[in-house]
Image (cartoon, rainbow, N blue to C red; front, side, top):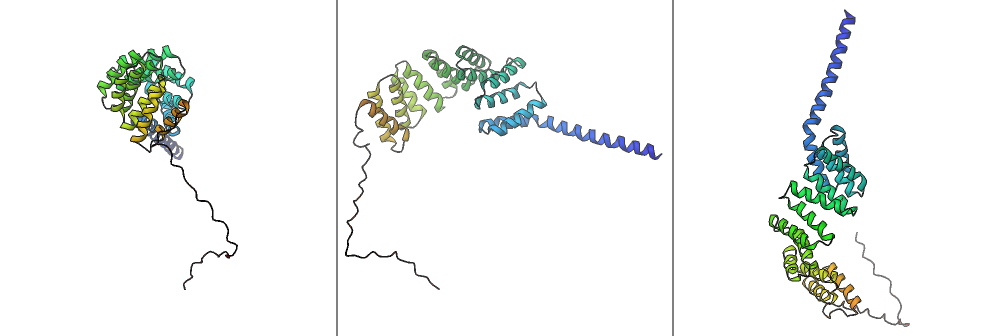
Amino acid sequence: MVAVLAGCAGVASVAAILGCASQEGRLKTDTFVARKRLTGELIARQEWETAFAYADELHLEQPRDAEVLVLRGKIYREKGLSAEAEGDLLSAIQLDENLAEAHAALAIVYDVMTRTQDAERHHKQAVRLDPRNATYLNNLGFSLYLRGKNHEAIKVYSEAARLMPTNRRLRTNLGFAFAATGDFRRAAHEFEMGGAPAEAKNNLGFAYERKGDLKNAYELYAEAARLDPASVKARSNLVNAAQVLGRELPQDLAPVPVVVPAPAPPDSKSTPRSPAKEEMKP
């Protein structure tokens, strides 16, 4: 009887352990989506180590989850591990070829690797799968701009701008694309919509400089520095342009020389005084 009871107790203990394990497994499953969302937020905050720990754990739990592979692939990409990023993102696409986020992330990896045709193909696929995603449109536009396809980039950027009309980065990118085609009037308008007045002037100056017109760039950098005297970027660009052109800085922007008074000659008749001491009070 004792042996039987002992056996029953052993069975009960095992059942309890299995029950706990089962409960823990259910808990992990229940929190999987929440932890996946948290990983995305950690990536957005650029907390790479913590994000990778979560993504790797999620992948161990569900290795065929395409979204988890995308998350881990993004972390690899941002840490400069292009081959690892490509592997995860290709695996994600094999699991779910209609996952726009996987195509978008892989396209950026190919941009970094200068595999331009592959980058464009996956950018366009991301846009086809999610045509109202302004971020994917912006990424495609930037990829086209980098390849010198400025008119195509303008068309894509403009479509994105209709979806996110107040996005500053998008407006600035569109401005540079217009400038690359020689349309500085439209470029100036987009830069004005994309930032503060000083920033807009500085961007327009940089666009002129990229086209080889350093004279106009110099004047625009000066305007930017006047609009925002604290702008290190505008002043630095102005100084560089002045040096290349062999010009002086505008008088109102030239650094004011600091006059340091010469030390008085020593008086041999005077005796040096010791420093004053603070009176000690009881």
